[in-house]
Each structure stands twice: as C-alpha cells, then as structure tokens.
Length: 108
Image (cartoon, rainbow, N blue to C red; front, side):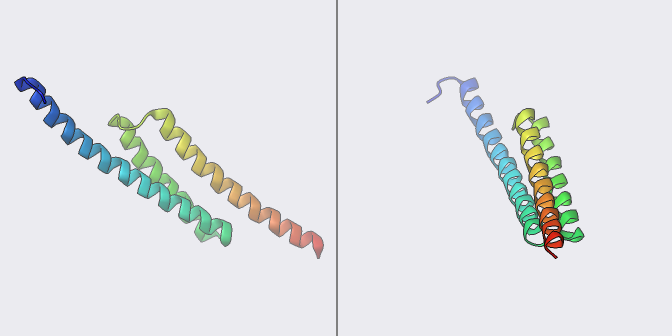
C-alpha cells in the first residue's frame, strides 16, 4: 500500500486512466470485429453494397484506432498494421470473387 499522499493520488489517477483505456480498447476491438464481419460478407456474396459497407467499416475502424494513437493507448505501428491488414483482407476477398467469376467464364 502507498505511504505518501502523492503515491495514493498516483494510484487513483492510474486507476481512472486504466478504466478509460480499457473502454477505448474495447470499442476498438468491437469496431474491428464489425469490419471483419463486413469483409466476410464480401467473401460470401460479393456485390457493390457489401464492398462499400466493408470499406466504410474499415474507415470507421481506422478513425477509432487513430484516436487511440493520439491518446497514447496503442502504438502507431500497431494501428497501421491492423488497418493495413483489414484493407489487405478486403482486397483479397475481392480478388477471390473475381477469380471465381473468371474461372466460371472459362469453363463455359
């Protein structure tokens, strides 16, 4: 247990910051999950609406992650890596669908 008045205050401050950081991280994870689900919809049924929804979800995720970076909750490289991974998986999902279409046309 802390002995000095300043140490006790530091414990209170760090506890407040921990709760705020946890809520921000939770919100980031939730938005990331929504973006992944949107990308999965692109994989199952590739149409313009799903692609646009996935891009919107990823952009919302990027916005939230950058807020976390400015508040020093997560590192910039981590945020960039996560956003890049989502965009890469979206691009891969779109490419898989175009390969399926091309393969079907080639067999006809």
